[in-house]
Amino acid sequence: MNIRMRYLHEISEYRNFKDYAIDTQGNVWSFKGVYPKKLKTSYKNKKGNQKYGEFVCLSNKLGQKTSVTIQRLMCLAFHKRTDDNKLIRHISGNRKDNSIDNLEWVSKKQKKTDKQYSLNETLSDKAKIIYFACIKKGLKVGTFDEFLDSIFNKSLDDYVMQYGLRKVM
Image (cartoon, rainbow, N blue to C red; front, side, top):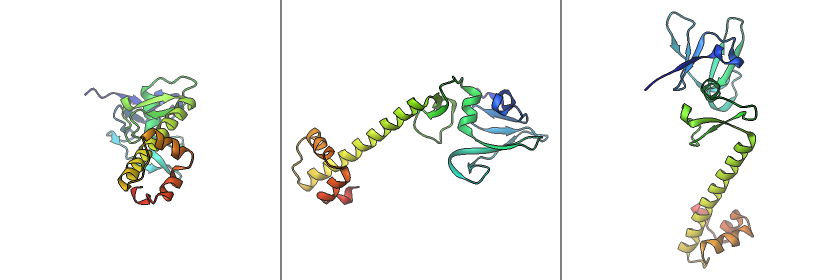
């Protein structure tokens, strides 16, 4: 495996942080001491706020401190960004996988489309569970398409309550 490293001062947003580098596996290294040191990551930023993503805290000789997500550093270091692409997408959907192959820059419109697609998949999965629970309970629901038409006239939760299907969810 070929491991490359990129110094953070080569990235315009972090040019004051000369003693740090990130490798292709998402490890951030400090070169402040005699030996390189792999930095520990946290799921809290420097203000202590719990946010999603692995953070790393950086400081420089000017006394500036910042916390940044590994995914952001990876994309800035190894992926070219255009003006309209300002958000990061995990291609596999696994937000803990910050490998180069799993990250890409996207626009807000693309990110919104991904969220809608994910929501539609989740609703479809829930509808299938409820459909099979109705059949198991002996309710006459017809085909899956007819079932979908009937539940879109009501909310999915109303359907579950009406037919006593609470245990399946």
